[in-house]
Length: 91
Image (cartoon, rainbow, N blue to C red):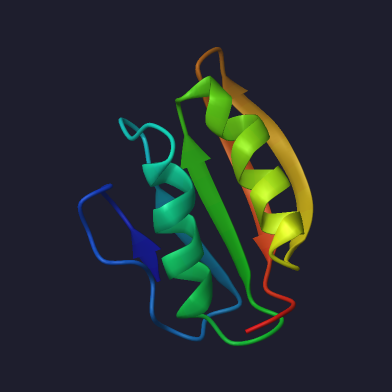
């Protein structure tokens, strides 16, 4: 399931690769929305978070690790856009 806007609900399906588009959102809302989206996914699921707020590129992975989740990587998609790939390890 793909979330197409920052105002949409987090993905709730059990698809192995969900995406959360947070373009236009700033910290701390980027991590709050990411955490809610991960909570809705089953263990082992992946979540790709798309952001354009540069501090989120550091804050989301750091917070996810502190929360016990996996960070598969961060990819720069464009000069001001990044994809953060997470894996749910804990409930």
